[in-house]
Structures are given as structure tokens and as C-alpha cells.
Image (cartoon, rainbow, N blue to C red; front, side):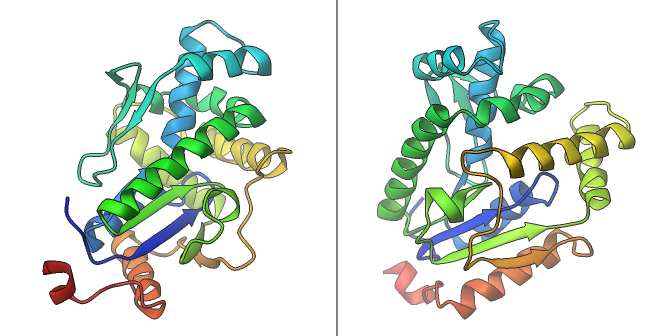
Length: 241
């Protein structure tokens, strides 16, 4: 991938079910930018923890697993990949077992330090080679890239987010009732927003965008408008040269 239209970092934060992944990939594709799903990194470590038979709440053992695991994230928005110790785990990390265990794993400070350092390395490489990157997660604008050129905090009602998660699960062949999904969304909200390390919250200078009544195209259009307002898109002639 050569240099695209985007210059700089677009940081997309927000709770589960706000459409971050779909929106971030579509936005990155629209701008010829790279894409990074930081949540996939925490899920991959969580999968490694579960495979090792380690209690996700045992911080010391979780850190040991994280240090001994090798993660590789592909940044092409058309084919984003997550590899754990050489194997593609993109589908497995979205399973219910990982979803239930990822919050305590991602709350471990040493794990976050390790993964944030890797995230910053990936972002720096993307800026050097592609010019811009769209990064999604829960602490991108507050911790990972506090000087990002555009920070957006996506929100939506818990009910809307549960419905979206249910549709995604069904499309991927995962079964869960809407009530169970809503309970899980609310559980993740509470856990992530109250943890001591990098709690889920909007950055002070983030633009908050409620996606409850917006579809994917509408959300991407709103973000592209924000990108243009910040002057982060270069002219086509400059992209070609």
C-alpha cells in the first residue's frame, strides 16, 4: 500500500457495539490509510491465556503468558489479520470464551504497557510508509496516541449496541440471545469504565459521535466530514506524486 489521502492518526474510541471495527476499516479504505484494531491484540493475549489454562484474573501469570506470546497484526483494512504465535486467530478471538475473559486480562497494567508499546510501533511504521492510520480501541485518544490529529469517541445506546453485536454474532455463526448480549455489553461497559488502568472514557478534546440512529455509511460520512474539517486529507495530485 502506497501513500494514501490521510495524513496523521484518526483515533476511534468507544464501548463495545458502537461499530468501531466496521467504521474504522471502511474509513481507512476510503482514505487509503492503514488500520489497527487494538482490541484484537488484547483478545489474542486473552486467547493465549485461556489456551495456557491460566486464570484470567491471575495478573502475574497473565503477564507471563503475554511476554511469551508473539502477536502479529496486519494493517491492511481490506484484509486485517491477527496472528498468535504464527497462526491466524482472527475468528477464534471473537468467540464467547474470549469475550468473557478479555476484560480482566486487558485490565492488567503490565499487559497494557506491553501492548501499547507495540501499538505505537505499528502506528509509527504506518505513518512512515502510508502517511495515515485509523486506530480503534478504548484508550487510543487518552493513552496510545494522545496527540492524534483527530480523536472521536463513538457512542450508542446499550440496546442499539446489543442488537448490532447480536447481528454480528449471527452472521459469524455464533449464537447468543439478545438479552444475554445486552447483559454482556453492560458488563463490559462497567468493567472497562471503572478499571484503574486506562479506563474507558473520551479524551478531553475528542469529538463525541452518537451512532444510535446512524448506519455504517452515515457514520463513515460523518467521520470523513471531520477529517476534512481538520484538513487531514491531501489532494489526489499529491497522493499520486
